Length: 325
View 1 (tube, helix red, strand yellow):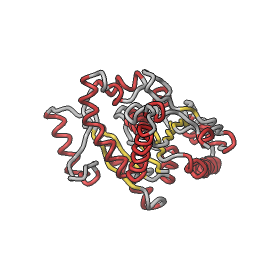
View 2: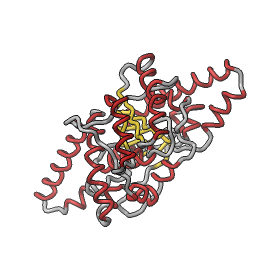
View 3: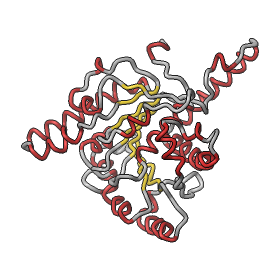
View 4: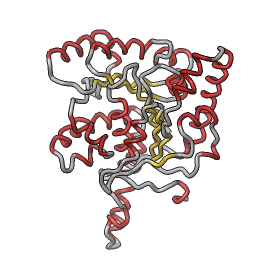
């Protein structure tokens, strides 16, 4: 299982949208996907539990919430493990960690932080055999939720907006007390920073100037494709529409021209991210398996749709590991 943290020290930049849309896309390709919602606003949890059409796959909650996972993790409390799963946010993480640290002596705070890291590491170790990809939606604040994710994760993606406030947050994200580079140097040398992904990009002089400033200062940390070209997500209402409806942008694109244009830009970026995470061999294996099943079904005179179910674009089902075995 590859664990990807989506984070930056700034709110409202599209972290949750990237988390949810990447998760839905990965699941549609056949990957077993887990999403952890570490943001007290629980927007990712809400979006992934909505369903717009019959082709949309709803994430199924595991038996423990994000707060319970960090404070009192128990493998026996997780329940059955579906192929598209959610550790839901419960709005209590700030109270249990941030406010706790403000009102409690350092010894108890340190003990709780250590416990949270140990619980999270144990959880990831136990759950890893059941999933191919785990995506963590983070809060804008740099606290224990970021620390444990960086210390135990495999990779980081940082959506950014081309604004002065976000530019100022880049330095904190990279080199702050709980910065990516600091954690990588001190605790998790295998941590991979995929890069900053400009989001909600518009073709205006102000945004072009902001992009030039970012490129001059942290150009080596911008997400680029195999041709070393900068990639970005444009400002499109279709992203918010897909999130609000609880559907994959690819599904919305089937009937919506604006969504189709947005998806044409987004799909190669998601493909790039999955490739950088090392999931291409798994995707090829899944694709080959689907092709073999289709050929065998056609040879037997069986309707492939009856055997394969939804197509890769429409999304795979929510079959549990237990039912597969």
